[in-house]
Length: 104
Image (cartoon, rainbow, N blue to C red; front, side):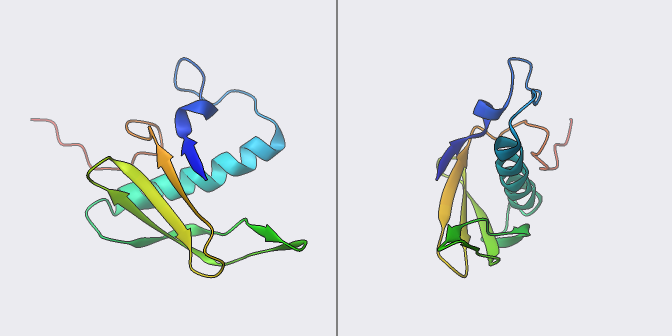
């Protein structure tokens, strides 16, 4: 899954009213963004969310590993159980970007 997180936001960078399925996906992806940006300098960390992949009517509950690819500033994620994976782009300076900005 490749996701431009801005597709979930309005022109002001706020979350508009979304269908329930989109709200669930946004919660999943925003947790991934937060985990990756809190541990921005770490090679890999685990997000506080479980996999949402459904196979044969069963939802996977595997842990989600996340990381930031510094070359292209994309957040990668992968389920350690089922291998479901994705990339999140355009996450910089959203409300879920938890990097420590220092003003000089």
